[in-house]
Image (cartoon, rainbow, N blue to C red; front, top):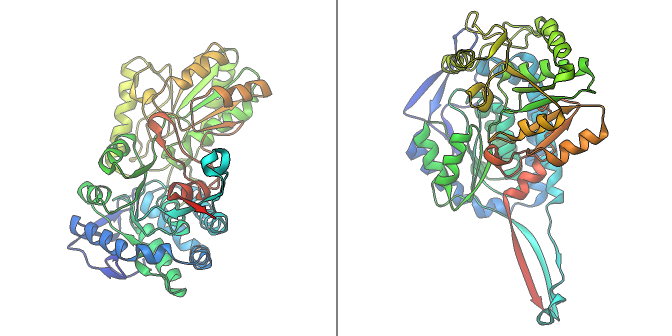
Length: 479
C-alpha cells in the first residue's frame, strides 16, 4: 500500500511525530494493513491550543473561501475514490458494496456543506411588539460556536468524519477530529485532503487537525474548557459520558439504537422481506439503524417468516473484497465474541433460532432469532451485527407500542399500503425518523438525522449540523 499522506498526526500547521504506532489489521484475515500513529494527552492539548490560535481567523474566512475549501475536498475525494474504497474495505472489513456507498455519500456531504455556506444567515425581529421597543431595529446573525471536537465511529470512518469536519468548516469553526482506534487510516487521508484544499486558498491548515489515541486522549479533548462543542457518533454509554464530561459545552450526540421494522397486515410481503434482508444485513449489520427488531402482524407472520427464510441464502457471506459479499467479518474479535454471546444468551432465555448464528471462519452468518424476551440484550440493546429478532404482534397498535417500548429512538420503519397507518406512524412513533416502505437504515445525508431518548440529541446533515455549530448573536440598534 502506498502512503497517501505524511507520517505522524496533522496537528498545528504540520505533521507531528508520535511516540508510538499501532497495527491496523484487515478484519477478514488479520493481515497488517499499515501502522498508524497513536496520539497522547499532550498532543490532544496541543491540538486544542493550535485550534484556539486560529479560531478568530477561521471565523473571519469569507464565505467564498470556506465554500472553495469544501468543494476542493469534494473534488479530491472524487479523484481518489477507487483508492479510498479499497482502503475502507481493508480497514473496516466492510463489504465493497457498502464502502462504495460510503464514498458516494461522502461526496454528497461535502457538496451539500459547500452549498449551505450560502444559506448561513439570520433574520429580523419586531422589537416594537412592546412599547419599549419603539424606534429600535433588531436582527440576529449566526456566529461560529468555536473549536469543535468531532469523534467518529469505526463503521463509516470516512463518512462520519466528513459529517464532523464539513459542517464545522462551513460554520467557520476550527475542528479536531478523533477517529475510532480501529479505523484511523481513511480519516487521516481525508484530513490531508482537507488541508491541501485549505492551502490552495490560503486558509489556515490548522483549521482541521486529527488526534488518535485512547479514552484518556479523547477525554482530554472533550473536557478542555477552550472548546465550543463536541460532536460524537458512537455508543450510547460513551456518548452519555461525553455529554457529562463536556458540560457546560455543547454536545451533539448521534448514538445507538435497536431499530424496528413493522410489517403490517396490508404490507407488500415481498418488499417487506427485501427490506428485512437489506436492512438487517447490509454492512454486516454494523450500522446504528440496521433492522434489529422485526415486528410482524400475526395475520401475515407465518407467510412472511417462510419467505424470509427462503430468501436468506441470497445474502452472500465471505470476503468483503468480493462485489457480491453482503456479510463479512465484524470489526474485531471482541465484537464477534460479544455478538455470539448475546445470541447464546437469547437462546438460553427462550428465544428460537430460525437461522444459525455460529461463526464460520470468524464470520457470523445472517442470524434470525424469534420470540426474544423483553430485557434480553439482543432485543433491548444495539447488537451491531448480522442479527435480526422477529416477534409476532396482534396488530399495528401492539407493534407501535413495542417500537416505543425501548430506551432508544433513532429510526423506525413501517411497511404498509395504508396512508392512515403511515401517518399514524409519523405521529406516534417516538423516534428521530420514520421511514415508510423502506428500511430504517435509509438516510439521505442532507436530511436532519438524529434520535430521541437514549439515541442522542442534536441533528446531523450539513444544514442542521451547521446550525448546531453556530450560535445566534442578537443586534439591537436605536435609530
